[in-house]
Length: 286
Image (tube, rainbow, N blue to C red; front, side, top):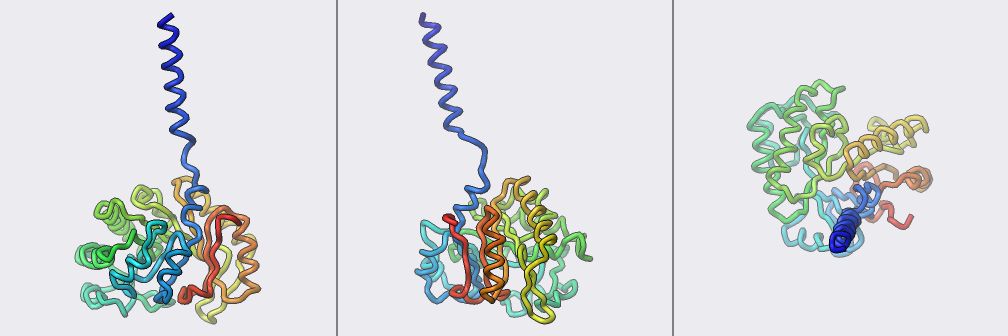
């Protein structure tokens, strides 16, 4: 009789362990933990208001002192600082340091020179000076931009191993930081263990830099892009955030109609991401 009792007890214990483990990761649920989110590369005036309104905030770190970062960062939100890995804006304090190492052309849309990531000193400037200068202020993590500067369709594709090394080193140096990668789907198979989430821009819209106009993507182009990014996000089990661009009510309404059909948090603003009061953020209740 005692053997039967022990068997039943062991069975109940195993079942309870299974119940505690629960189902596998639910990307949709993870997405909602980051919603609503906002991006502002202009200094936010109402720090406390923004901190309380958004679960995730992406900001330009050079605009804020450590005290201001403390005001933006709360126990209930995640505060990410912007850093660009593939190119550099000429106004950055560290631009002269990188310029001395030599560039590999210029992004004509933004007038930002491309970094020579094959140069060990260039990588050291980013990893040992730029990023520590950001993280010491108390940010929860980073958004890694311009990863696409080494995309297969560019003449800098040969720099991909160095981009991977930089992202891996950031993860090693800041293991508790939240790392959000902007685009760069072609690298996910090599960096997915070093990042926490993925962001994609221009999903429902397109921006023309020549005439500075905003457009709704053709339906087929939109469907194809959604299919590609959702497959990548799902394959590597990464939450997906979407940023689209619009400055008119009519276009924004059509963008919302599209993005509301998806299960991912989204943010809509101007291409400059410079006025958080004139933007649209999705909410979990939608």
